[in-house]
View 1: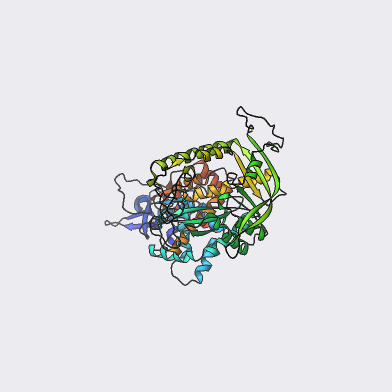
View 2 (view 1 turned 60 degrees about the vertical axis):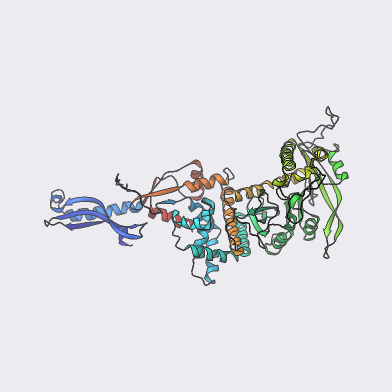
Length: 592
């Protein structure tokens, strides 16, 4: 043991020759990084103390040892001296976070520390990739910000992050090369540690924008889901049924959604050893090529299908009220409303086994028809009907705005409204609205009436014909979790805007965000989905303490969520005062 861990009796000789006794100890200043001696208690002059004790030296030496033992057990009260005139300094690091200990626990449970240590061992660079990656992931979950700001806030943790900002950027280039390997390793660890199931996987696409107008091979202008004009990058993501991401891939911003599925599904089939999977996705990312590829690879699918874009025979099947049953499987009575239309119930569904023709791209780039035999499940929901009416009302309002001021829009920003405007054309090169002489932009009333007929109806097509209708619907409804995952990625984790320009560093940015997202989802699931990830991360970010004196920190926040998290991960957030040594023991425990 080092001496500063002990309290000891200190003797000082004054000018008059008298001996003065104090209890003292050495402590390390966490700001200046140097050791200093502090007085714990002034005892008095030796000659005066001899009136109370026959041997003051022996007595107070024993007292110092006794107090040392108490401190080791964490039972000794701490006396804090407050100077009302003490001023603040321009030194950072006085307030540190303890909430990240829970994130550290999951990080090490996933054995990510071993992964990075092994990679660094053979890389031959001097910076600490593990330490830098930890900082990037912990900060992304608790206080997402730029890489530079993250580095500036590195002292806000009870862990030493000793590296330069240049090291951070050098490490990003290194991380950018690890994407495929790390994503696969992470999947294997989730499978091993948490029993991931991959017989059903969900897929969707979103995009993230950059704070620049400059385009390159990756940053391209395309349809932005947020209506932005800046360059974007597309991300395709696979997720399991627990809402935990499996893997992802980045594509240029102008890549059509349906072109992203096959490359990533092919990679998953080659590398992830998941066997047969049933892919679940929305109609926006599906094409005949995707269906044909999934079946050729011995996989299955549950895809939504556009009723409004279907042929007349399929639409007639949907609107024909024969065969519909309610949630309990009872036939829905054929009743007629005041307008002579078949009345719609709160929920009803029906299905059929039917062949369907799809268009598949051949090797020479031509389109050929292929027949797939599948199950069609159609259901109606009042909830979906109301949502469809509200969404169309917003689109029509946007269409009216487009007709009034077409110069405000281009092909990207007019998305969702353009179909309701007659005589609307766009420049193929620029995407700008073209002004055709003599042609007035008009609202397409017929289009609106045609769509209204199908409000509330939803269609699914699937290869899994042996599953019940309700099971197919339930499987598809799980797709909401991937939409929520994208919302968290853009909201709580602030994955965009992206400020980086080099592709390797862009890849590293999304990789650290992906790992953070996986950890956040695991944390959410471990608490049995009782709390949202946003609420969990907010509570953990507030679990911070301020340095008051002698390596002692005072904590000032506690809520129900921290109690639940602490109980699950064996981290006590209830103590108001904590010694630095005790805090380091907690953090050390999370790494085992």
